Amino acid sequence: MAEGWGRKILGQEWNVLSAGIEAHGVNPKAIMVMSEIGIDISNQTSNTIDSQILNNADLVVTLCGDAADKCPMTPPSIRREHWGFDDPAKATGTEEDIWAEFQRVRDEIGERIQLFASK
Image (cartoon, one colour):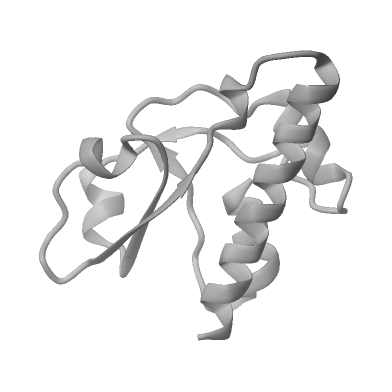
């Protein structure tokens, strides 16, 4: 979801990539919840972060849980930030509860990237 928001809000000025310490595939609910607001992430992929991506980055943003601690070391010249969001894929409850969690996290990520873009 963050990659989709980043591409929409930051446009061509930024090369937005998403990667993690594990590749899980894009969650179908994430695709649906982003589609609800007109952002298509169906062609995005879940990639494993590697040293080439890290070494060529200007900024690395970690998003969920303990990702900040598990993210591989980056050179000191690369700015790192952790924006802690709940992982909606771990939501429990009814389908309505889970959907509401995906919507909430989607909106929080969008607001945070919008704030970042305005700085």
